[in-house]
Length: 232
Image: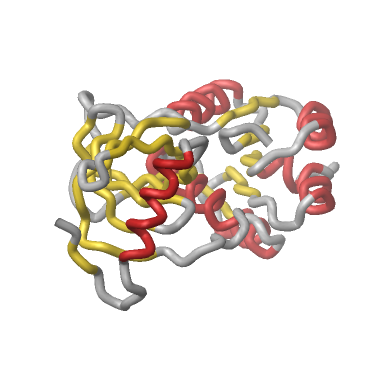
């Protein structure tokens, strides 16, 4: 698959499709819009996808092929169904292993649900995450913090606002305590406990050997413990 999670948005509601696609693209996903059931099934058959976001009538109408096709290709691919705010459709979707979002679609709820679904569907991490008291980092020029680390990546806390747009799919992370700048790939996004901030799960990507070794040395120096340690 491509570097960004590929999400098929299947709905007869063109305006909703356009809005959802814009939200997802702004968060680093690769949205693909389809407006007919026939095109939905063709899209599922022709290319891999990381998540299916589908209208209830497309998912469970007279010809409910799309969900079955996704499950046949990869049972772990997440499916989010969009439908009316009614317990009947929601129960129906959940009983078939899908998630459900009621209309009108809320941007924050949709992005959070998509990010968590994509994250949970990915393979288990190869090494354990180590938690630390957050320490300074600079993400594409924006002062930020690292809040946990692993051999493969890190979780960042980044301010959100007009002057601090979400990082692109690939971005630079300057780590002052190491004196290096990492290249990272954004994997998921979620809200953070602190106001006006977001968490970004990131994977190290295409770093020179010297920088990769410096990062691994830092991670190795952090003990496995139930409490966070502080890095000065």
